[in-house]
Length: 201
Image (cartoon, rainbow, N blue to C red; front, side, top):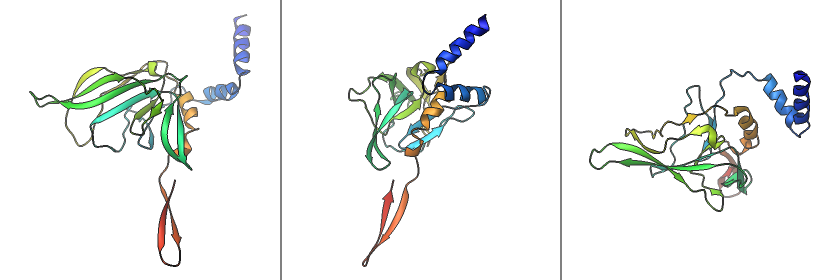
C-alpha cells in the first residue's frame, strides 16, 4: 500500500491553489538542466552563468556593497513602472551582509571584510543593495576577511550554494517582477517652438 499513500499525499498537496502548476513544472523540467540564481543590483536583473558567476555594471563610488539574500521582495512604485525602492517582506526570511573593500596599511594589500548587518526596521531596501533571490539557509557567505586584488572590476568574495536550493520556485516568482526591469525608452514630443525628449519608464 505504499503507492496508495503516496498518491494520497500528492492529491492532498495538489488541492492547494497553484500546486497543480508547480507539479507540472517539476514534471516537465529536466533535473539535470543548469539553472542559475537570479540577482538584482541598481535596476539590473541577471542570472548566474554555468560557472556560477554574476556580473553587474558598477554603479557606485564607495567600495562598500550591501548583500541581501531573500526569496522575495516587494517593489514600492514611484510612478508607472519606476521603482522607488524595494521593500523587505516581514514574513520572509532574509539575511543582510556588508561587504567592504579595505586596504591593510602595513602590507598595502587589499581585502574584503564581510560582516552581518541588521535588516532595516522599516523594511526599506536601497536600490544600491545587491540582492540574491534564494533562501538564506541555502547560501553560505564567508564572514570575515578575504584577500583580493585591486582591479578595474570589483570581485566580491566567493559564496557557496548548499543543497536544497529551489531554483524553479525562484524562477516562477521572478516572473512577477520581470516587467519592472528593462531599458529606458525615449519619446520625442514636438511643439511649435521646440522638440523635447521624454523618458518613459
